[in-house]
Length: 150
Image (cartoon, rainbow, N blue to C red; front, side, top):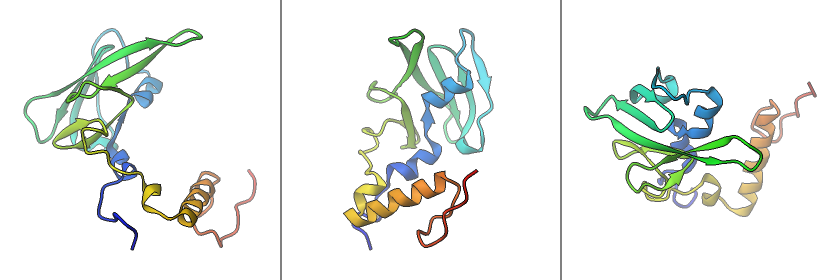
């Protein structure tokens, strides 16, 4: 058994994380308020209202909506990059994780460890290999054949 096996990891928490980069790619930040129906990924969110500077989450287990501030920074080659602020500590971050009855930053949730931190050096190498094989369309076991090139 690996050390800290009962502890939550960032990878487990990222299943329901709100990532501002994904929201930006989806093009939902507008000057006016837009109501977004959350996907199956965020099953704890009943309704999400998004404007350029504020995200309002109506959670299934809470009657008061959670408000998340959005700020923007300029990029060097034009455009702007959005950032969300943790509702608890107001730290500027890119991802909020579900925990404590809402969405908060990694630091407010007690700094969960990464999956690779629980493994030995050899096991981290295998984990890296597994993930690379999955990105290439193969299966996780290293003994399986590498899939043919597309």
